[in-house]
Length: 502
Image (cartoon, rainbow, N blue to C red; front, side):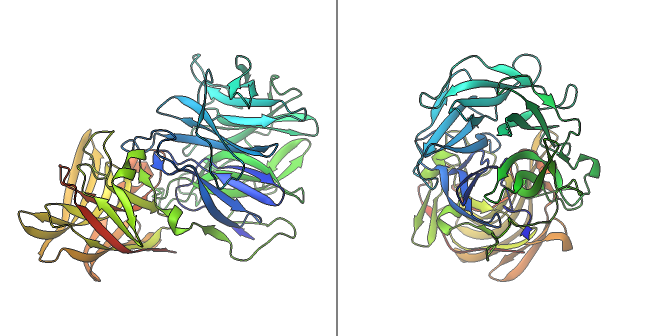
C-alpha cells in the first residue's frame, strides 16, 4: 500500500507524466527559489527529488516578499525525447515553457508564450503529433477553459484560443487547471473548480474533437471533499492530473490538506488516488469516492523505502531570486548576511532577503540549529514562517553591546502589523543552540522554544495556519539574519541544522 500524502508539506498543484518505468512529478513553488521541484518514482510510493526546473537566478525574477506570487501550477509532459514544463509566472502575467532532455536538468531558459490568456497552462500531443495548449481565462467577463493548437518548436499559439468548457456547475467558481487526454478515440478535459479551498473539486468533460465543445460527465464532480466539512481529516481535494501505469492501472495525483481542528499549517500537499474507467468516464477510488490514507500499489511494482526523499542540497529554499545574494554555504554550515530585510515585514521587493528554509512536513516536529551572531549590532535565529506577516521566531539579538535571546510572534490583523515579545532574557554569549518543537495534535499549534536544551517559552501558533494567514503556501522552518533595519555586511553562521518530524 502507498501512504498518503505522497509528498507531505507544501507541494500543491501536482502534475505527472510517465516515460517507460519512470514517473516524474512537479508541483507549484510560488516565490521560493529554486523553483518547481521535480520528483521521480517507479512505484508511486517512493518519491525522490532530482532537481528543480528553475534553478538559475537569471532564468526569471521572483519577488520574495509576496510569497504566494511567482510560479503557479506547472504541468510536466514528455514528447519525442524531450520533457516540457509549462507554467504561469503570476507576477509577469505570462506563461512560459522550459525543456530538458533529462528531467533532473539542466532545463532551458523560459520560452515566453505571447497571447496566451489566464493561468494554469497545459500541453497535449495528439496521435498525429499535433500539440495543443489549454488554459483558463477570465478576461471576457466570465471564466472559461480554452484551447488552441500550439507550435512546440516556436513556443507560440498557432491560432486564437477557442472556448472548450465552462465547468460542470452553472456559473461555477474558478474553472482552472485543465489537462487534456485521449482514450479510446475520445478527448477528455480534467479540470479543477470551486476554488482551491474547502470547496475544491475535480470535474471532467469529453469531446470527439480536441478543440470541440466539451460535454460534462453527468456524475460530476468525480472528486470533492466539500460535503465532508472543515473538520474532515482530508480537505480541499482538487487540481488533479491522470496517470496510466505500465500495467494499465490508472491513478490521479491531486492536492489536499490535512487540518487539525479545522486549520492547517502545512498548506496543500500532494495525494494519490486510484482511478477506474466505467462507461467511458473516470471514477476516483471506486466504491469509496474520496481520498484515502492508503492506496494500492501498481501490480508487481511495490518497492521498499516508500515516502518522500529530498537530498540535503535540494531541501533549502529562499524567498525570491535575489535572496541568493544573502545566503551561502560553507561546508555543512549556512552563512546569512545581515541585510536590512530578513523574512520580516519591512524592506523593498527588490532587496535580498536574509532567510532560507525548508518545508514543514509534519504536525509534530523539532527544528534546531546552532546560531552564531557576528560581532555587530544584529539579530539571527530560527523561525516558523507562514508568510512575511505571520511568523514565530526565536533569535539572538545584540543591542547596545548587550546580547539577548528573544522569542517574538508576528501577525497581521485589522489592517495592522502586530508583534509580541513572548520571552526575553539577557545572555552574554553570541552563540547558542536554538530549538522550536511543535506539539502537533497533542497540543495543536503550540510550540516549545528552547535555548541550549532548556525550554524557555510555550508559544501559541494558531496565526500560522493558512486559514489565519491566507495565501497559497505552507509553513517553512527557516534560518534568518538581519541588520535590524540596515545593511551591515556581516554574516551570521548556522550549523548543526536538524529537522525531524513524525
